[in-house]
Length: 306
Ligand SMILES: [Zn+2]
Image 1: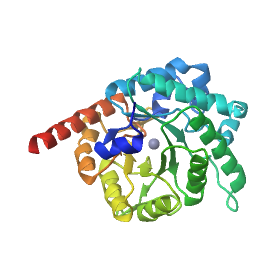
Image 2 (image 1 turned 180 degrees about the vertical axis):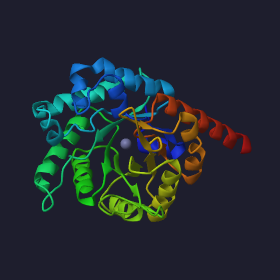
Image 3 (image 1 turned 30 degrees about the vertical axis):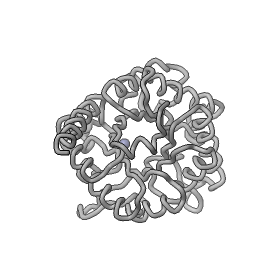
């Protein structure tokens, strides 16, 4: 029987997966189209991507449901399929492990707008959308829920509450930080710094504090975030930095860090105490495979030293 995720990370650091959005584009998803609908219309393409991550060594795979809340799906006219889309996503991610023990993490991204008084959505609307998605993911059997790419504590809280009410066995809150213009620190677009986020998450019942994406948040910045999180909380830490900086090449956004470059940051992250290491925008199965090599070598070394 598989150990719960929160037990497994006590023993060793787990490997996450890499980007989904950019991989869907490579597989033919058009800019602006609904990638989550592919869980129903092109499940084999989603599966092929996640299978490559599983084969590269991912212990954890995020479901293809970043935009799988009613509010996000509604923009594409798919609000009637919230439950089906989320349920299918969990089955696909599970299938990607091919029978091997792995952790399926149900992904909830931002609802994609602003709440009152800054925007048009009420807290209740967003809360209901998150509740519905979290419930669908938990009912389909996820091992954890991640509320990711969050910039405001108000929205993050709605996600945490939704995951808790759905009785998710592990709740991960993940913030997107931007490096400040002078390069001295990083905080979210809404001005939240890592210490505040970590304390807030601990206070509101998250099990793991995380970061993903953001501007300028490379492996070294992720390491700094791990240290700052660990100063502020005793919860385990998960990181999913981008593959360096986005650049526009032939009208396409490409990220500039190769698997070799990015994987240089894996050991420092292990030494900083990260519990789950994955990657965000621009990363590929090749990046994850290289992470795995670095991680294995480090553990090998630890055993020898002991
Ligand atoms: Zn990203």
